[in-house]
Length: 67
Image (cartoon, rainbow, N blue to C red):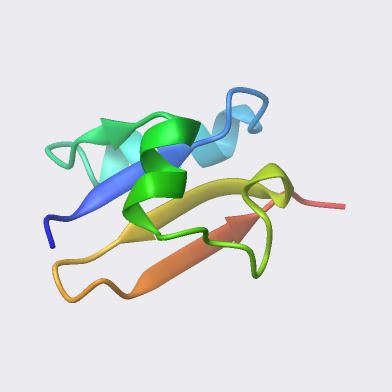
């Protein structure tokens, strides 16, 4: 699996900045690509994530929306 980043369009600016800062060369994926890539990633649901980073092993690091 190739590393990728999904960033929710309504993610806070600081989350978007973190993704650009720490994963500048990692391809961004859309929500449809993310759902296909993660095989129905539902825990937590994509709608509840500000961003997700997936490494080459397929391990996901989730950045939830701040409450």
